[in-house]
Image (cartoon, rainbow, N blue to C red):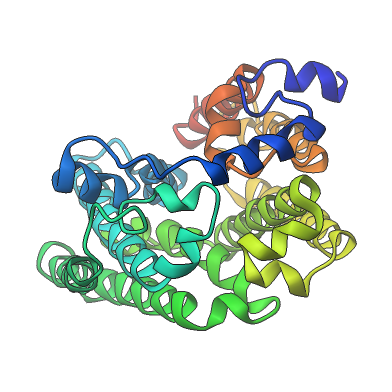
Length: 328
Protein backbone atom coordinates (compact mmCIF):
# COMPACT_ATOMS: atom_id res chain seq x y z
CA UNK A 1 0.00 0.00 0.00
CA UNK A 2 1.39 3.40 -0.95
CA UNK A 3 2.00 6.36 1.33
CA UNK A 4 -0.82 8.32 -0.27
CA UNK A 5 -3.30 5.52 0.40
CA UNK A 6 -2.20 5.35 4.02
CA UNK A 7 -2.59 9.08 4.52
CA UNK A 8 -6.07 9.04 3.01
CA UNK A 9 -7.31 6.95 5.95
CA UNK A 10 -6.72 9.80 8.38
CA UNK A 11 -8.61 13.00 8.99
CA UNK A 12 -7.06 16.42 8.85
CA UNK A 13 -4.42 17.51 9.59
CA UNK A 14 -2.57 14.25 8.93
CA UNK A 15 -3.78 13.85 5.38
CA UNK A 16 -2.96 17.40 4.37
CA UNK A 17 0.03 17.82 2.02
CA UNK A 18 3.13 19.00 3.78
CA UNK A 19 3.35 22.08 1.58
CA UNK A 20 -0.10 23.25 2.68
CA UNK A 21 0.73 23.33 6.38
CA UNK A 22 3.25 26.18 6.59
CA UNK A 23 0.75 28.90 5.62
CA UNK A 24 -1.66 27.55 8.25
CA UNK A 25 0.97 27.91 10.98
CA UNK A 26 1.60 31.49 9.91
CA UNK A 27 -2.08 32.28 10.02
CA UNK A 28 -2.38 30.95 13.55
CA UNK A 29 0.27 33.37 14.81
CA UNK A 30 -1.89 36.31 13.82
CA UNK A 31 -4.97 34.98 15.62
CA UNK A 32 -5.48 35.77 19.32
CA UNK A 33 -5.14 32.90 21.81
CA UNK A 34 -8.30 30.86 22.25
CA UNK A 35 -8.77 30.11 25.96
CA UNK A 36 -10.24 26.71 26.92
CA UNK A 37 -13.90 26.44 27.83
CA UNK A 38 -15.00 26.22 31.44
CA UNK A 39 -12.85 29.00 32.85
CA UNK A 40 -10.25 28.05 35.46
CA UNK A 41 -11.63 24.53 36.00
CA UNK A 42 -11.61 23.85 32.26
CA UNK A 43 -8.11 25.27 32.00
CA UNK A 44 -6.81 23.03 34.79
CA UNK A 45 -8.35 19.99 33.12
CA UNK A 46 -6.88 20.87 29.72
CA UNK A 47 -3.51 21.55 31.36
CA UNK A 48 -3.54 17.98 32.72
CA UNK A 49 -3.62 16.70 29.10
CA UNK A 50 -6.32 13.99 29.54
CA UNK A 51 -5.84 13.03 25.89
CA UNK A 52 -2.34 11.87 26.79
CA UNK A 53 -3.59 9.53 29.52
CA UNK A 54 -4.06 6.84 26.89
CA UNK A 55 -0.29 6.24 27.23
CA UNK A 56 -0.89 4.96 30.75
CA UNK A 57 -2.57 1.78 29.49
CA UNK A 58 1.02 0.49 29.31
CA UNK A 59 0.71 -0.36 33.01
CA UNK A 60 -1.44 -3.32 31.93
CA UNK A 61 1.31 -4.71 29.68
CA UNK A 62 3.28 -6.66 32.31
CA UNK A 63 0.18 -8.22 33.93
CA UNK A 64 -1.08 -9.22 30.48
CA UNK A 65 2.28 -10.72 29.52
CA UNK A 66 2.39 -12.72 32.75
CA UNK A 67 -1.07 -14.21 32.16
CA UNK A 68 -2.33 -12.81 35.47
CA UNK A 69 -4.64 -10.10 34.15
CA UNK A 70 -7.67 -12.31 34.87
CA UNK A 71 -7.02 -12.08 38.64
CA UNK A 72 -8.98 -9.49 40.61
CA UNK A 73 -5.99 -8.37 42.68
CA UNK A 74 -3.85 -7.79 39.59
CA UNK A 75 -6.67 -5.92 37.80
CA UNK A 76 -7.21 -3.71 40.86
CA UNK A 77 -3.53 -2.90 41.27
CA UNK A 78 -3.13 -2.17 37.55
CA UNK A 79 -6.15 0.15 37.61
CA UNK A 80 -4.67 1.97 40.61
CA UNK A 81 -1.39 2.37 38.74
CA UNK A 82 -3.23 3.77 35.74
CA UNK A 83 -4.80 6.46 37.92
CA UNK A 84 -1.54 7.22 39.75
CA UNK A 85 0.31 7.69 36.47
CA UNK A 86 -2.45 10.05 35.32
CA UNK A 87 -1.74 12.12 38.44
CA UNK A 88 2.03 11.94 37.99
CA UNK A 89 1.92 12.79 34.28
CA UNK A 90 -0.42 15.72 34.95
CA UNK A 91 2.03 17.00 37.58
CA UNK A 92 4.76 17.04 34.92
CA UNK A 93 2.56 18.94 32.47
CA UNK A 94 1.72 21.56 35.11
CA UNK A 95 5.39 22.16 35.90
CA UNK A 96 6.51 22.00 32.26
CA UNK A 97 3.97 24.55 31.05
CA UNK A 98 4.68 26.88 33.97
CA UNK A 99 8.40 26.73 33.20
CA UNK A 100 7.92 27.22 29.44
CA UNK A 101 5.19 29.84 29.63
CA UNK A 102 7.17 32.61 27.92
CA UNK A 103 8.31 30.35 25.06
CA UNK A 104 4.78 28.98 24.65
CA UNK A 105 3.39 32.49 24.22
CA UNK A 106 5.61 32.89 21.15
CA UNK A 107 4.53 29.55 19.64
CA UNK A 108 1.72 29.52 17.02
CA UNK A 109 -0.30 26.77 18.75
CA UNK A 110 1.18 26.39 22.24
CA UNK A 111 0.13 29.97 22.96
CA UNK A 112 -3.39 28.56 23.37
CA UNK A 113 -2.33 26.41 26.32
CA UNK A 114 -4.10 27.38 29.58
CA UNK A 115 -1.10 29.00 31.27
CA UNK A 116 0.21 30.76 28.16
CA UNK A 117 -3.25 32.13 27.38
CA UNK A 118 -3.66 33.43 30.93
CA UNK A 119 -6.53 31.17 31.99
CA UNK A 120 -4.47 29.36 34.63
CA UNK A 121 -2.16 31.53 36.79
CA UNK A 122 1.50 30.53 36.65
CA UNK A 123 1.81 30.50 40.45
CA UNK A 124 -1.15 28.14 40.77
CA UNK A 125 0.47 25.68 38.34
CA UNK A 126 3.73 25.84 40.31
CA UNK A 127 1.79 24.90 43.46
CA UNK A 128 -0.47 22.20 42.01
CA UNK A 129 2.27 20.45 40.01
CA UNK A 130 4.38 19.39 43.03
CA UNK A 131 1.24 18.55 45.02
CA UNK A 132 0.06 16.13 42.31
CA UNK A 133 3.54 14.60 41.98
CA UNK A 134 4.03 14.09 45.72
CA UNK A 135 0.46 12.84 46.02
CA UNK A 136 1.02 10.19 43.33
CA UNK A 137 4.18 8.89 45.04
CA UNK A 138 2.52 8.89 48.48
CA UNK A 139 -0.49 6.97 47.19
CA UNK A 140 1.92 4.54 45.54
CA UNK A 141 3.25 3.64 49.00
CA UNK A 142 -0.17 3.49 50.62
CA UNK A 143 -2.05 1.60 47.90
CA UNK A 144 0.73 -0.51 46.39
CA UNK A 145 4.26 -0.97 47.73
CA UNK A 146 7.63 0.71 48.12
CA UNK A 147 8.87 -0.55 44.74
CA UNK A 148 5.93 1.04 42.98
CA UNK A 149 6.47 4.33 44.83
CA UNK A 150 10.13 4.23 43.77
CA UNK A 151 9.16 3.83 40.10
CA UNK A 152 6.67 6.71 40.36
CA UNK A 153 9.22 8.85 42.20
CA UNK A 154 11.89 8.24 39.57
CA UNK A 155 9.38 9.02 36.81
CA UNK A 156 8.42 12.34 38.40
CA UNK A 157 11.98 13.32 39.34
CA UNK A 158 13.54 12.52 35.96
CA UNK A 159 10.77 14.27 34.06
CA UNK A 160 11.07 17.36 36.23
CA UNK A 161 14.81 17.32 35.53
CA UNK A 162 13.97 16.97 31.83
CA UNK A 163 11.75 20.06 31.95
CA UNK A 164 14.45 22.16 33.61
CA UNK A 165 17.60 20.96 31.87
CA UNK A 166 17.80 17.58 30.14
CA UNK A 167 15.51 18.56 27.26
CA UNK A 168 18.48 20.50 25.86
CA UNK A 169 21.03 17.66 26.17
CA UNK A 170 21.62 15.77 22.92
CA UNK A 171 20.52 12.10 22.95
CA UNK A 172 19.75 12.26 26.66
CA UNK A 173 16.54 14.16 25.87
CA UNK A 174 15.36 11.27 23.68
CA UNK A 175 16.26 8.73 26.36
CA UNK A 176 14.46 10.72 29.05
CA UNK A 177 11.20 10.89 27.13
CA UNK A 178 11.40 7.20 26.19
CA UNK A 179 12.05 6.26 29.83
CA UNK A 180 8.60 7.55 30.74
CA UNK A 181 7.02 4.72 28.75
CA UNK A 182 9.42 2.20 30.27
CA UNK A 183 8.49 3.31 33.80
CA UNK A 184 4.82 2.75 32.97
CA UNK A 185 5.53 -0.79 31.80
CA UNK A 186 7.61 -1.51 34.91
CA UNK A 187 5.03 -0.08 37.32
CA UNK A 188 2.34 -2.47 36.13
CA UNK A 189 4.53 -5.36 37.28
CA UNK A 190 5.82 -3.86 40.52
CA UNK A 191 2.32 -2.90 41.70
CA UNK A 192 1.23 -6.54 41.54
CA UNK A 193 4.68 -7.89 42.46
CA UNK A 194 5.06 -9.71 39.15
CA UNK A 195 8.44 -10.72 37.68
CA UNK A 196 9.56 -8.63 34.69
CA UNK A 197 11.31 -10.27 31.74
CA UNK A 198 14.45 -8.47 30.55
CA UNK A 199 13.25 -8.95 26.95
CA UNK A 200 9.90 -7.37 27.86
CA UNK A 201 11.67 -4.34 29.34
CA UNK A 202 13.99 -3.99 26.33
CA UNK A 203 11.04 -4.22 23.94
CA UNK A 204 9.18 -1.52 25.89
CA UNK A 205 12.28 0.69 26.10
CA UNK A 206 13.33 0.58 22.45
CA UNK A 207 9.72 0.66 21.24
CA UNK A 208 9.35 3.89 23.20
CA UNK A 209 12.56 5.27 21.69
CA UNK A 210 11.16 4.52 18.23
CA UNK A 211 8.02 6.53 18.98
CA UNK A 212 9.96 9.47 20.44
CA UNK A 213 12.56 9.61 17.65
CA UNK A 214 9.80 9.20 15.07
CA UNK A 215 7.92 12.14 16.53
CA UNK A 216 11.01 14.36 16.51
CA UNK A 217 11.84 13.25 12.96
CA UNK A 218 8.32 14.12 11.80
CA UNK A 219 8.59 17.57 13.36
CA UNK A 220 11.82 18.22 11.46
CA UNK A 221 10.40 16.94 8.16
CA UNK A 222 7.29 19.05 8.59
CA UNK A 223 8.86 22.31 9.76
CA UNK A 224 12.41 22.12 8.40
CA UNK A 225 14.71 24.80 9.81
CA UNK A 226 11.80 26.33 11.72
CA UNK A 227 11.53 23.22 13.92
CA UNK A 228 14.30 24.44 16.24
CA UNK A 229 12.27 27.58 17.00
CA UNK A 230 9.41 25.53 18.43
CA UNK A 231 11.56 22.83 20.07
CA UNK A 232 15.05 24.04 20.90
CA UNK A 233 16.56 20.54 21.20
CA UNK A 234 15.94 19.92 17.50
CA UNK A 235 18.69 22.41 16.68
CA UNK A 236 21.14 19.73 17.80
CA UNK A 237 19.85 17.06 15.43
CA UNK A 238 19.75 16.45 11.71
CA UNK A 239 17.04 14.63 9.81
CA UNK A 240 19.47 11.89 8.82
CA UNK A 241 20.52 11.31 12.44
CA UNK A 242 16.93 11.05 13.69
CA UNK A 243 16.15 8.69 10.81
CA UNK A 244 19.05 6.50 11.95
CA UNK A 245 17.75 6.53 15.54
CA UNK A 246 14.18 5.48 14.77
CA UNK A 247 15.30 2.85 12.28
CA UNK A 248 17.76 1.42 14.80
CA UNK A 249 15.13 1.51 17.54
CA UNK A 250 12.50 -0.35 15.54
CA UNK A 251 15.05 -2.99 14.55
CA UNK A 252 16.04 -3.63 18.17
CA UNK A 253 12.37 -3.61 19.22
CA UNK A 254 11.49 -6.36 16.73
CA UNK A 255 14.57 -8.35 17.75
CA UNK A 256 13.89 -8.20 21.50
CA UNK A 257 10.19 -8.93 20.98
CA UNK A 258 11.13 -12.00 18.95
CA UNK A 259 13.45 -13.21 21.72
CA UNK A 260 10.73 -12.56 24.28
CA UNK A 261 8.04 -14.34 22.25
CA UNK A 262 10.18 -17.44 21.75
CA UNK A 263 11.15 -17.46 25.43
CA UNK A 264 7.57 -17.61 26.73
CA UNK A 265 6.38 -21.22 27.26
CA UNK A 266 3.39 -22.21 25.15
CA UNK A 267 1.95 -24.87 27.45
CA UNK A 268 -0.18 -27.50 25.72
CA UNK A 269 -1.24 -25.22 22.86
CA UNK A 270 -0.89 -26.73 19.40
CA UNK A 271 -0.25 -23.27 17.94
CA UNK A 272 2.62 -21.03 18.98
CA UNK A 273 0.44 -17.94 19.44
CA UNK A 274 3.21 -15.82 20.94
CA UNK A 275 5.40 -16.47 17.92
CA UNK A 276 2.48 -15.84 15.56
CA UNK A 277 1.90 -12.48 17.27
CA UNK A 278 5.14 -11.36 15.63
CA UNK A 279 3.27 -11.01 12.33
CA UNK A 280 0.75 -8.29 13.33
CA UNK A 281 3.32 -6.76 15.69
CA UNK A 282 5.87 -6.35 12.90
CA UNK A 283 3.38 -5.09 10.32
CA UNK A 284 1.98 -2.57 12.82
CA UNK A 285 5.46 -1.06 13.12
CA UNK A 286 5.83 -1.04 9.34
CA UNK A 287 2.49 0.71 9.01
CA UNK A 288 3.36 3.35 11.59
CA UNK A 289 6.77 3.85 9.98
CA UNK A 290 4.99 5.10 6.85
CA UNK A 291 3.73 8.08 8.83
CA UNK A 292 7.11 8.68 10.42
CA UNK A 293 8.84 8.63 7.06
CA UNK A 294 6.27 11.04 5.61
CA UNK A 295 6.65 13.43 8.54
CA UNK A 296 3.05 12.99 9.75
CA UNK A 297 3.74 11.23 13.06
CA UNK A 298 4.12 14.40 15.11
CA UNK A 299 1.05 13.38 17.15
CA UNK A 300 1.38 9.62 17.74
CA UNK A 301 -1.95 9.37 19.55
CA UNK A 302 -3.76 10.76 16.49
CA UNK A 303 -2.05 8.26 14.18
CA UNK A 304 -2.74 5.31 16.47
CA UNK A 305 -6.40 6.18 16.96
CA UNK A 306 -7.36 7.34 13.48
CA UNK A 307 -5.74 4.72 11.25
CA UNK A 308 -8.26 1.86 11.06
CA UNK A 309 -5.72 -0.56 9.59
CA UNK A 310 -3.28 0.20 12.39
CA UNK A 311 -6.04 -0.29 14.96
CA UNK A 312 -6.92 -3.59 13.29
CA UNK A 313 -3.33 -4.77 13.45
CA UNK A 314 -3.25 -3.80 17.10
CA UNK A 315 -6.31 -5.91 17.84
CA UNK A 316 -4.86 -8.79 15.84
CA UNK A 317 -1.67 -8.62 17.87
CA UNK A 318 -3.61 -8.43 21.14
CA UNK A 319 -5.75 -11.42 20.17
CA UNK A 320 -2.83 -13.66 19.23
CA UNK A 321 -0.88 -12.61 22.31
CA UNK A 322 -3.80 -13.25 24.66
CA UNK A 323 -4.40 -16.65 23.08
CA UNK A 324 -0.76 -17.44 23.80
CA UNK A 325 -0.95 -16.15 27.37
CA UNK A 326 -3.93 -18.35 28.21
CA UNK A 327 -2.62 -21.34 26.19
CA UNK A 328 -5.69 -21.62 23.96
